[in-house]
Image 1 (spheres, rainbow, N blue to C red):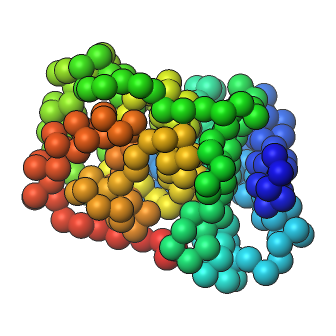
Image 2 (image 1 turned 90 degrees about the vertical axis):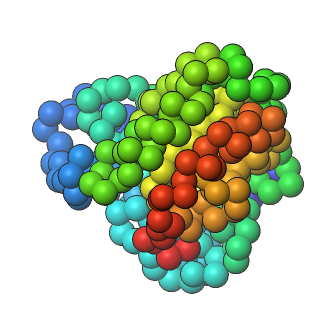
Length: 272
């Protein structure tokens, strides 16, 4: 990787990954709190986030942060967007699908993204205009031409007031023709899987910027499309996201968009 900022972000992600994996055999003794119903945070989340911020701040003290656990700080025109452990519930149950997610956003533009799976030691990266890679090898979205036979990823709403009924309508709309739906529990990693062609598409409601910023850029740099569920590009603001290869994206959008008329537009509740 010749991009110095991307190199630093990778160093930060790997440092966080060491914290995460170092604690995987002492999960039962970890301090765990509930941020809200069914939404957990552990001491590992906090330690991994502190390690990421330490590495990034040492290299680039002029930039701000939007981090899941510590919130916004510093320069909000150029900032790192961080999820230190996306998939905390999976991690706490030893379900092996979780990741570190780091993005850099300048103004309205996502400039780089890193999604690191420390359990499988897989590193997904992208910088704007330079393509997307998995462990240093170029990746592309799948060549799937329609929903028929497509393998899709999703996230089932679990928070209160999360529009489960509308979500189930969208699920029915795309499930019938697909080869299957996977709900694995880490949006950043699911998006990276879209970029690598492991999934043909992904959609979810009510995510936060740190869940999707890095993965969204990786999908785009792998030749995919990313948008909100209404056909626009406000996914970082409203938290509703659709990502897929171009043909599957269009097919999914045509099925999902008409079902959202009753769903109010919500902000993702994190200034980006």
